[in-house]
Length: 116
Image (cartoon, rainbow, N blue to C red):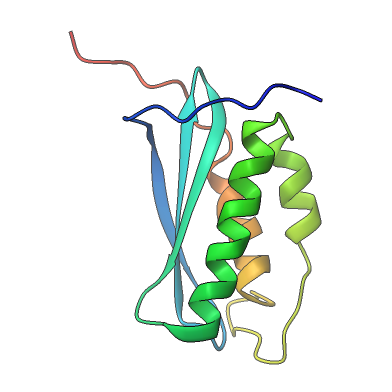
C-alpha cells in the first residue's frame, strides 16, 4: 500500500458547483499538490442533517483514497451513474453522480503557477 500523504496547511485547487435533484446545489472543491489531486471538499448550499452527513462521509473517503494514491479517475468511475429517487432535470442522477461529473470537469487541473 502507498504511504499516506499529509495535507499541508495551504492547498490550491478549484471549486465548481452542480444542481442535483433533491439535494440542492452541491459545491465541490478539488485540491491539488504537485499536480495531483490530494483532497476533496464538499458542501450543499443550505442542506443540513442526514444529507450533509452523508456527503461529508463521502468527502472523507475520497480524500483518504487520494492521499493513499487511488487515481481520481477510479473514484469518478465508481460514482458515475449512482441514482436516487429524485433525479435532476439536468441529467444528474443523484448528488453522487453530480459529484462525479464535477470531478471529471476539474480533474485535468493544470499545476498552479505561483506568483513571483
